[in-house]
Length: 302
Image 1 (cartoon, rainbow, N blue to C red):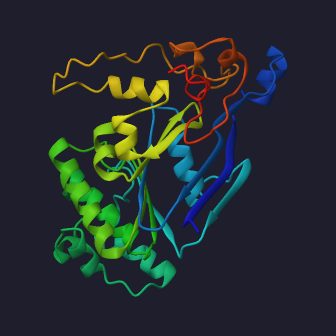
Image 2 (image 1 turned 30 degrees about the vertical axis):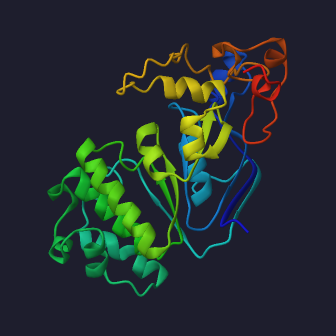
């Protein structure tokens, strides 16, 4: 049985103007579907990457999993003991008025785990003496280490990592990724790793899901997805990565922009940007079959 299972999970947000404005302007309510019928299984001990352009719903999926949002539709089943989240911004996710010791100790006090703050700080490469300092006394990479220590204080089986390295310098990113890989091996952790950086995801993920406008359009083992992408959107994302090897391979740049999620296109939402779209793509939503949701792929047109 998978450690985490999402079954046709959707999340809507009411982004309507205030009631009086709607009455005066004769406008209906505006409902934004941020996540649309997402199904995903994650097994114990693996790392699943979730990639896509900004606004595609990756972070909403993360918040649904940890319970910060409730699903509008669908079910989320978690069979582990506890799960925790590592947030994107290490500057905003730590209380500036608390000492590091108190920040890391809060989950211990709340959950009653047998963890020791000093040992947790050592695990993430910090000194026990750092517990007496405040977050502003640390660099971005050190603050993210504090965030990881705080997450580990709850003794989780599963960590949801919402772009944990995007706010860091490249050299610091590598250090944090190495730390997370080492912790996963030693503690048997399971990760959902959300990122827009394909190079990072290719290094850490066992499987990768590609999201577009709230839906997963492709899900495959990382090696397979990066060497033989199937969905046209996945191909465009990979073609946008600089070809440092100068292979001379034909490349299709990402064209167009993500449509307005308040008025998504009919049929396949990617069809206005897709070079392989036909009338069926414009009319019919593709089913997710054999790891991909694309009429052109399933019909053998690409």
